[in-house]
Image (cartoon, rainbow, N blue to C red; front, side):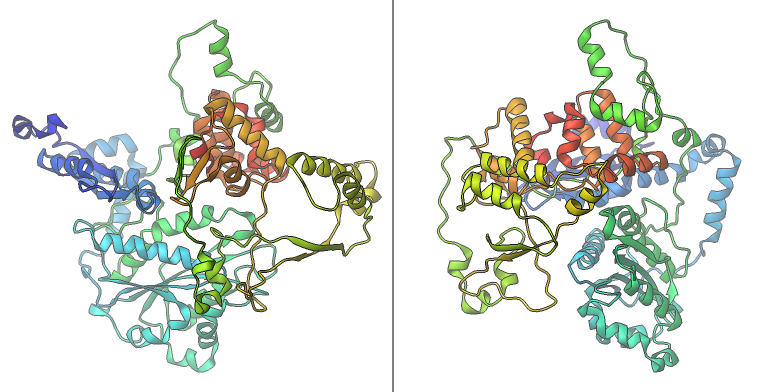
Length: 625
């Protein structure tokens, strides 16, 4: 910083051949928010550098991910595009990338019309059909991204504003869509649509779907001046997968609309929404902008911000895709510690090698960072307190202060962050299942419930013994593997939790005692954190570490999010274990197949992965939460 501030540095213009981008991290609770990032960004320009991407400032006080994640998704491509478009690098690009690659670049540049309108008369419309909130959140995230671009004077934005709302509000905007835009260009519409029930549209989109299905609507062609893109969310466990998204995409075309981007369908049933949603959201803003201006869609990976000149993304060199990453030659060592740090006989590595048909001495495939899911900034914050730290007591609970109007809505009182603590007041088998296990447990621990964690573990062992599975006894497997229990759950006596048929009620179930103990032991051994210490999550009221691990993270469900595997690889102290986790998290076809067989098919959880790859147990409490 002292160097870039010097007067003599400005005279030499040391960065005149440099393209750069700056991400600033700061806290709006302090006066000089992101002062260092702003200073570096400003000085780089004064010293001759060219900005490849506008300065982004992330606020640690409110949550980093809203700024950091979009910035991370595009920064590499933006810097590469800026460097490749520099006049003095064109000849070098020809020789380095080859004639074939250069021809592709020239064709894409030639396809862009020379004179395109700089702005639209109408806003960008982002509309959603949402039942559980996923589609609504994706739509609002897109709108927030575009609003940030509008607030940045260095960013090119085609639409002067953005409107985000549910699809049932379509009538407010029909008069705009039916009119021709400036210079004959098109209006922009992005739709994110979920499907509910048996292929039905969510309630907040039902009127819109009925409208586009009418015969008289087809005759009027109300979307003939509209470019559109549709993202459908669905679940392949149901027959009519993404029915609403497919219906809207099809009908908009029949009603005169023009696709700016092909329909994409994301599957909530696999738990891997991000594999479809992330690439789509990365490029849809650029695609819709370019299409509405009359230019080609820029739908390449890493393209989020519409650029003033369509610069094609640099294709990856073959060597980066086909060859494993070459590690620098390391100094040989005969010490036991060095050998252990580089190789592993852990269960995870052994099993993965067997799955891939590799010998124990063979190396696991290496993957480049471009093949890995992005490491998103933490969506939550936590603060750990010492045991002697005194915390102020709560002055009152939310329900105690609620008015009659607010208490009449269970959705207002009870949320995922503030759930109602219910109890099972009755249960019965709906299948022909023996109640012997239940009677045995009641004989052991009594009828008053579990007095301690040990009681729960004892009860769990009884269930496993009575309802165990046997590969040699098919009848036993069918009997024990299909048990349906009807449970009667307690509701608040004050009727503050109201619901109607069709409402969604979520059940938050604590993690198994064995999994909780395993994670707590790792925190104690590696970081000296005790279960009784207090931790505050997202600036909430402090709770014990034990309660946070038991209730605030999912240790026991099947681990379907590859980003978590990539995150665990960062904590692995064993190189071979880190390589194995990166391979399982990769987008490579062989890595995806291994992930399916090793994690999904065998129902491995977060705790299972920690057991299979023990060097990851050094993960911090911040990393877990």
